[in-house]
Image (tube, rainbow, N blue to C red; front, side, top):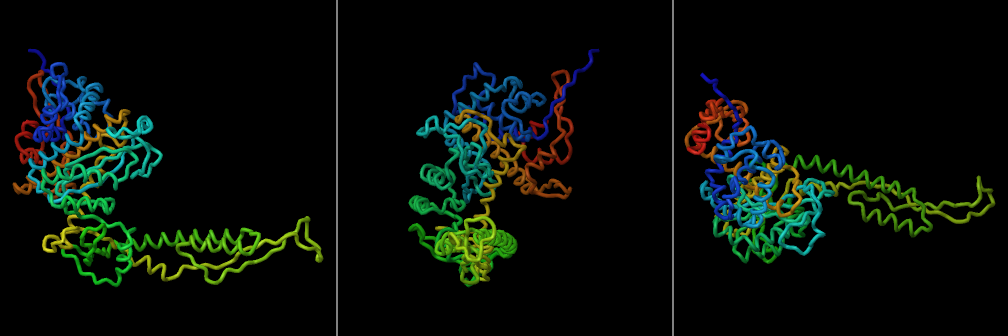
Length: 544
């Protein structure tokens, strides 16, 4: 009797990722919109994209050209499709797939898919959250090649959110729905653009598509959206918005400074939050400003204020000490230098009028004789400085304060509590950026050289975030719907586990093949079966 042959391949949580891709029909959607020469290729464009998504959510940090090595010990026929082998997913296949995505238009291609996903998951999409971030690019700056080319992003230096302005970068603008954090829109941009410009372009060119497809009520963004021209664009399109008001606006600065004298009322449902409503017409748009005070945040900011004031006052005192040792040729020059120090000092003030000391200078060596006359005089300015209590009180007045604005004028439709809750959903898109920049993700820095392929890779990265958020949303939704629980890290029952924790719990699952025919998934435990059963048929077939 011939000896049985066994072969084991790692499945782990990748079955959840592949099953979600099938549930959302990502490969079918892409293949339906991009012409495939499938008779020549072993892998379609859609399958190549799914392979990159699985690799990205494998949390190995491997670059794309190592995709064949990543899939060597994976059941690739089960994850992607029959007949596909690891060597088929080489860099040429992936490069052609990225080129095809770019040629199809990554933003529009992604938007249409995201709308289908939001509708499939039956998300209400009450608000959309808009924000941007930057990614390092280990490639050559292309902004000098053709600076007038508007069809392609420019890899160049710019404002870095990661505090690395010395590196070339690209910018990703992202918009998510506010419940599950599903990205509904992505737009790559050149590395030197700012959020204010990008937000205006997105609102001008794409907002009507969002309103028609998703029927969202509010557009939420940070202070970069609060520009007069952008607010006017939103008002023209009758789009309700919620935005943080930047404190460099004169009216906002005055309101925050008056916070101690304003009558604030508690915000329902939020401990330590107080608010006051003020009408505004900034940019010619009728709005409601809400001044919020977070007392707990104010306490932590007071420590930061003390540290900053100490650092600044010591610097200014040292500058005055250096000034007192500097020689001037006349009294007026010494007083002008002191006046300049006083003007530049934000905290320190002179306790008394500055004293100018005149010192004689002699040309000869050694101690001058009593009857010798000096060649010239040098003038030194002396003064004592202090920090007034008014400076401290002025700094403490705005601690824990911020202003939110909305053009929703109906007070019954949006009160202070609902406004704050909706704005806090901005953490969804910020959490998405943290996910994309995680060192365990697909890449923390982009290693492609062609700007076109970088745009396409940013779309693939956003697809990874979409699949991750969709898995998390479905798990939480079904656990509550079916009254089931899943153990958390402390082995306590919960109904809102993160997808990352569920992925970790699926470690150790393998597909055992006997004589190249029979396949068995081994290592399944009760908690894993709970997730598989609640998610449905796609996931049961993946792990059966």
